[in-house]
Amino acid sequence: MASYDYDIGIIGGGAAGLTVASGAAQLGAKTLLIEKAPALGGDCLHYGCVPSKTLIRSAHVYHDMKHADRFGLPKVALPPVDFSRIARRIQDVIAVIQKHDSEERFCKLGAKVAFGTVFFKNDRTVDLDGRSITAKNWVIASGSSPAVPPIPGLRESNPLTNETVFDLTEKPASLAILGAGAIGCELALVFARLNVTVHLFEMAPRVLPLEIAAAGDAVGDALRNAGVTLHLGAGVESIAARSDGEAGHSISVGDQQVFTSHVLVALGRTPNTETLNLPSAGIETTERGLIITDSKLRTSNKKVYAAGDCTSALQFTHHADAQARAVVQNTLFAPTASIDKLVVPHCTYTKPEVASVGQNSEQLEAASIEYDCYEFDFAELDRGRAEIDGAGFARVYTEKGSDKILGATLVGHDAGEQIAPICLLMSNGLGLSAAGKALFSYPTRSE
Image 1 (tube, rainbow, N blue to C red):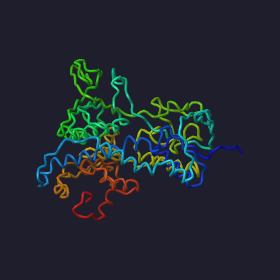
Image 2: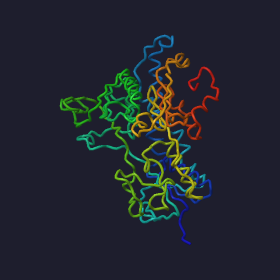
Image 3: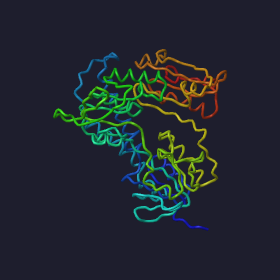
Image 4: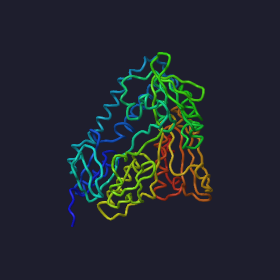
């Protein structure tokens, strides 16, 4: 019988890798976790969910303070934001959570943690900074990085990305954001509420183009009301240093020139697979570099699994965690865990929030699927009236003539929280009528 250095080796210490390492080590498997960055935690902790939600909260509190009179309180003349204090708060929150994702914690769980650059030498062996390591099963959880498309002058402008924007200690004077997906819209609203001049560029005719039109329109209105200038329906053609002697950048869109001090690119993600030498292990990828897996998350090399952003178009922390739990089952026990029927919601944390799960009306119509739509306007919600957040709606799509839930879109305050009961119903195969059997406290948004 072949002998291996480890039962399971994991490449990547982000959301998926940490979940696999924790589960495998606690189950007694000899576990190795490899991370190229100097600390564990991955994109979510250092560059994504944690810092962005921390910044979002600060911006929205500042906005509410400026508009205290809406709640019958005295109008307050606020001083300008000291962005360095917000930056320190972001790093403080990261540091607290980092303890949970620390090398020390995973070593105590029984895993070996190593830092360095890794690539495959063959189907069971990797090279870690010149040292060969074997494992019975490998798990690739290498994550993704911000994509920087070949727009002339973009790389030369040294643009901010989600990996660098949270390192800012001073507020930008003005900001051009390329891409009006979730990241672009969230950061546009945040910086506008902190009194930064923001220009948001999107090739599609509306923001959040992957959501239904009503959701994109609602967020677009909120951005405009916050002072964001939207440039929709045309792509950025080039970026150059200003020619008038002023610091900053000139962004060209058609015959229009926009001048900003900073540029932030939010135009999608690229899987971190290029340097892993996957062909030597017999691992196939798509043209975009995503690792191809089956429903059990096995790659074309059945002894190597993949989870998280490096293999999925659904690049959400909660999805990576669910994949990782399936990998633990399939590598250490019988390979029976499948991700085929996962119900995966997602949320954009603007004001209003946009939360979706399953298929929306535009996707159902494109697939020629007949459906019924049930809608509730949040302006009718007493809790929303009391807290002045009534704008928005909930739409739930069911199979035509049935209560089987096909999907839902919620737009409004705490939409990401409010969609949870729908996810629970869908995950357990319960129809929409099951919600009618429950009582909810009045006045709540869940009601």
